[in-house]
Length: 304
Image 1 (cartoon, rainbow, N blue to C red):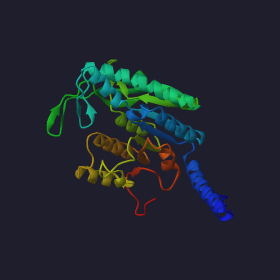
Image 2: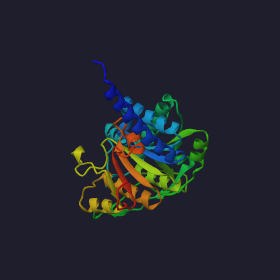
Image 3: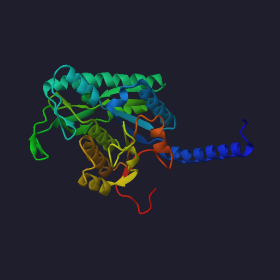
Image 4: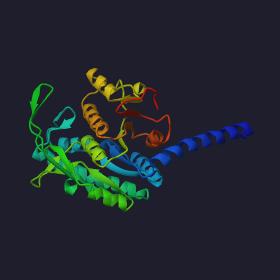
């Protein structure tokens, strides 16, 4: 059945309205830096990798500079389990023995290469920026108390310094740097750092406009088992309340610290969106409605 003239007119008007809104965001973000933190699970399906790379390419074409920080949690867990090495985590952070560190390094190398290849297949210049090769410096985390018990973290690093040179060189070449979250200690050793923490640290120190967490869920959920409980908009006060109400657990508590660090350090907004939805990233940053959760330091009286 042929589409009638009124219907065609409405389609054209809707498309024009969408483009007009997107154009305003494109103009606002040209030249801006977005730090994207990609969960390790998104690397496991070629379709998910390709869909994200397509969105990155679109934003890159609009003049947005992007730095990707990837995790590899599920891959590290699997490698350790297959080798009979215990997987130990506290509060979403990995206890890293020398034996575990070997699997961490192996997994990060493989996932980093995979993302670089995926972005290149989409027509982007992408360069590997391993954190331990001069980009990030950290000091060993001392034993500390967590939930009432003393935790010995092993070869885990607390970030101290970033050398922006490798990232600036990538941006100057029109490339997307892909960062693995390892760091060098002051004596030349390698330390394991949490990828969420690394992403926030880079966002602050490189003066990013946005920090975006790409997840396997739609965003921050009031009920982790119910996608319909998506929290669309919040600020630091809301984050404190959610933690007090024990909505934030395990890895989400680590993300909460990263969100606080980024917003307190001058990043304008932090977003949590689905990496499984092939349009979620673009909808989040180029539309009024968004697609996931957005946090700012302090909400204005009238929501954006």
